[in-house]
Image (tube, rainbow, N blue to C red):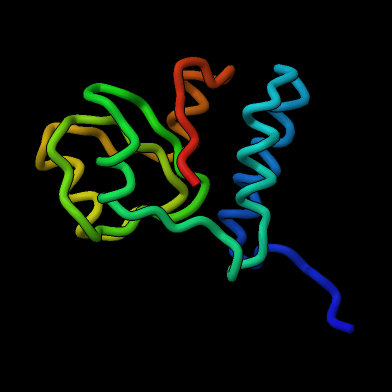
Length: 121
């Protein structure tokens, strides 16, 4: 039987570790949940398309994707999207409608408690 090792990307490992430490310090279940979703095996990691963001968000809303944002679909409203990674077309489409594509680290610095956020999975 193969032993599960977790993510091998050192940047992702560091992010997960930092989120867990902050979750303990701030007693934030939000950060703990994000760290657990990022810690999944590669085949189970979350991939969200722009079309999914368009469907489930409102104008000027902030969402977090504990995984990758892909560029399929169109976005018609400005939203702030935080994710582990963005594809090139996804970042372009978000910025084209005056939205923001930020990293999870930036979002945690601005909003460590996770208030007024949606988690898209």
